[in-house]
Amino acid sequence: GDSVTQMEGPVTLSEEAFLTINCTYTATGYPSLFWYVQYPGEGLQLLLKATKADDKGSNKGFEATYRKETTSFHLEKGSVQVSDSAVYFCALSDPYNNNDMRFGAGTRLTVKP
Amino acid sequence: DAGVIQSPRHEVTEMGQEVTLRCKPISGHNSLFWYRQTMMRGLELLIYFNNNVPIDDSGMPEDRFSAKMPNASFSTLKIQPSEPRDSAVYFCASSPRGGPGSTEAFFGQGTRLTVV
Image 1: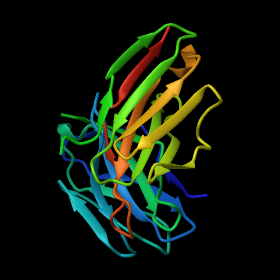
Image 2: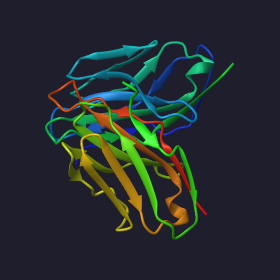
Image 3: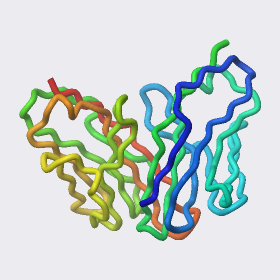
Image 4: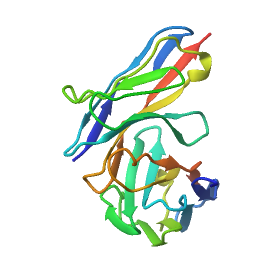
């Protein structure tokens, strides 16, 4: 079945460092791909998405490109801030598989001043 | 729209008691998901519905767990009897069904369940 594998955490960075969180997927159809963010004590919020190959999703300085050839959707940010500290989830939704939505295990990011 | 609404936000119960978690999805959304989140196992999909019909319940841990969606605006997740290992945060999410690009999920704030 469909699945998502993402880089294990935790990840600790200094402010203004470059961030990469790797994500790869397995799907039977042509999924949409997402990154969600979860701040402490809250539910998951959509950060960005891409719906077809070579699409780039971006929001709040974060970017991820849908790479069909490598089945990847890595999250990047050029300069992280303390306020970016959260748990990040990669996810896929397969509209050709009954809208099944699967999440990776999550990667906890801590940014230190 | 107020978003996905879950109740209660917190629940503390004794082992063996029945627990019912409630969810009101966003109006017009056709898909509804129940997830469980723990430190050990991360975010697990328990069950999801399309148009009120359960599509995949393979994530439901055991027969003590059951979920219903009697109509498009309400769903419940029931645990009977509850056990301490059921302690977790339970999230409900809904999604507008459709073709590619319209399937992002919107999450509720979660219910933090503690079974003592």
